[in-house]
Amino acid sequence: MAKRFTAGFSKFYYGGQAVMEGVMMRGRTSVAMAVRRPDGSIYLYEEPLQPRLYRNPLFRLPFLRGLLLLWEMLVLGTRMMALSANVALGLEEPARSGAGAGAASDEQVPARPGGLALAAPLVISLGFAVALFFLLPVFLASLVPHQIGGSWLNLFLEGLIRLALLIGYLLLIGRLAEVQRVFGYHGAEHKAINAMEQGDPLDVPHVRAASRVHTRCGTGFLLLVVVVSIVVFALVGFPSLWLRLLSRVLLVPVIAALAYELLRLGAAWYHLPPVRFLLAPSLALQGLTTREPDDSMIECAIVALERVMQRDAAEERAQATDLPPLVTSR
Image (cartoon, rainbow, N blue to C red; front, side, top):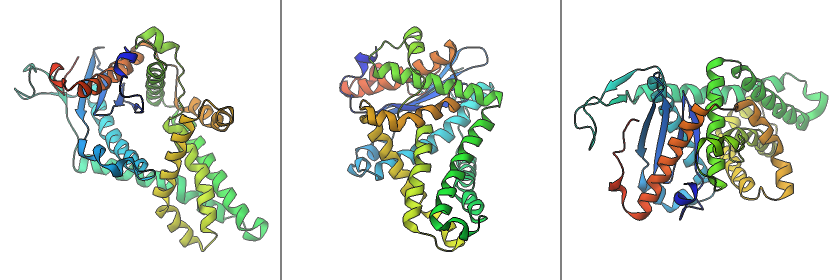
């Protein structure tokens, strides 16, 4: 099935993320999320992506495309995480009659967060990430007397502290039972995409046999951010503490854009031994953010990935009317 739906889309990179008791997948034209209900059934939610944004030539420009995609995934991920939590906890609300063509009157849809309900967790999570991984390392590194090793050692120490905080944070949250299940779905997401990109059928046995690490994983992106930040901040130099703090905040988009392009290059040239060697730490770090999924997790990943691939193939054939409505349950 993977070969069937990848026709005409070989240059597009499918991606996704784990959510509460499920997996979200992003295709060329839509995003789909498959979540396991408390009764064991799978709830499938999907929505179209904004076509004007992706048809804009600016979206394909290096560096800018990374910022746009990262922002989209951040907003989508925050919203889908809230939606999936409602489904996983059984907090679905009855859909209004006529919500979609062919929709049953008793179909259940999760409450959709918006406005302040979406903006608040987004701002809090962004602020927490910047404070923990960009500002705190500057403060801690500044405690070392400048005379001991000079500014270069201080900058390198800042990078080491940033890396230690990242690994420590992943180890800490990985001890939580709920997060361990999310990491299991993360592994299922990787396995499904790996199986599809290898041309294997999207069924449980083939997906289970695929690798649970992936070259385009967001965990690897975080590691690249740490490495790139050392280089970028070295170019800034060693101004006063407050200027260093300000530069760390202002340069976050620049570092993210550079890291995204390096991630794409690494994935594209992964077949070369030197690139494999350079990406080995990134793949190893995924051992902290993925777990071996069970079959129920793999099923959710397959359902979500198949749906976005179907939508893309239907868009290519201009026969999208043959598919069920964009909000449905299974």
